[in-house]
Length: 533
Image (cartoon, rainbow, N blue to C red; front, side, top):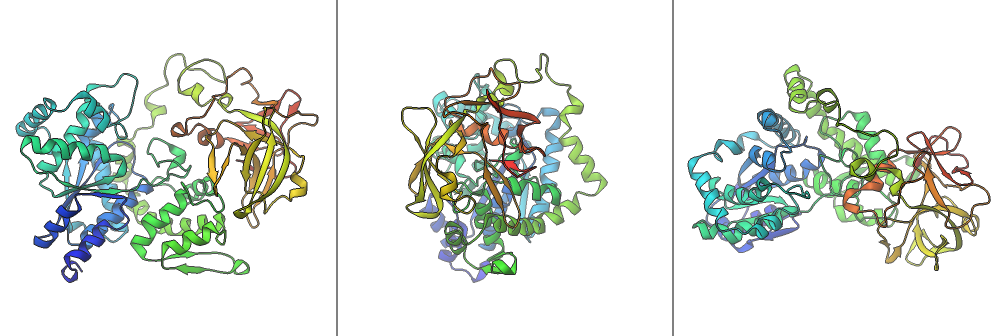
């Protein structure tokens, strides 16, 4: 295919779906003379997940455009980044990454013989490379090194020197791999600009940089190996895929931070050129889309139901994952998986002074205590249709403050305006306000829901006699202090929400502990076993 493409067509293929390109003219100049040499590096830390299909699909584009592609397994970087990969596991994790990345590429039809695979420590421990690390460290300020790694290197209160070295090593890789361009996520941008600034000072050429957008995870934030609920593992069973997609953030009409929709855009369309929405004939039957913008438009207009989108992505995703699952059924690869990623519960019994229940102060356990949530009783004092979205309500809700809060909810399909007027409800009040179709929603109205055909949704009910502003707490966590504002980056709500359920007695619970006010239990009317969101 590459032989039939002009330099301009190759450039378009190389840069399609990218968020940003630094050095476009350099790329065009190289393509006029020869094929482009590009590398993609991955630190061998946590297990790769389905978001890795995004760079894999771009690597497929690079090969179609005739590029010479190198994949770097950055084992030394994995160790330098706050020892995310212990030294004794580096070799095993490189082997795991190599097997799983090759399996991914094979599942999307990428010929492996056209790729070059390199391990970082094969050249990063050489005399020449080490001297260049020292040369670079004599030029780069602490400020520049820290700034460059801010979105990539794990940020801690007392950073290690190794984290400051990380960006410089990534810059040097461009020279030692002899490439024209480096490809990565847009979160790498500051490292790329550091490379552009300092490599010429060492007498090396400035490279071009190709940046993918960051694909939202299932909770609506960046998909991360360290956030179990934000990702689908490449070896997850069909049942696990279904369960995680069912919980995925996919609000009707909302195309912002929608990980399910983003997967369609950045993986399925580039690989297949089309996407099929599968649905019951009574809801219009299956429909094949050949451009993503049409899918996005119909989802925004609520012509595509989130349940149908999730079910259709589930089918396509399992088709991609099945060859990987089969490959890793072999005894050798099972053993490799278990040794590269040993079960923490079997290798470490837990730290001293670990606390059970809801007491204590400080640390991650308290950060994830349900007392961090500011849930209050509210009274809906007015409700009307959103001026720009027929599927949304615009509500004014009294939560015991000087002014009522403005809330946008997607309850139009489930509850009438009359039933909502003057109703007592529950609000999560310390999320960051979000604009929904141009209007800022200042809280989240909490509801019980059960997926299915049709989906069923009911607002949660406070005890009879409740007043606006009364605090809701989880049994056993009465004394904890709610955060003024939940930090979106820490995804506290998303992590806690996973364990919020409706019992068989229609009582709201978190990990089998009841949600309550001083007057009694929080309930819903009929949705036994439902989720809360």
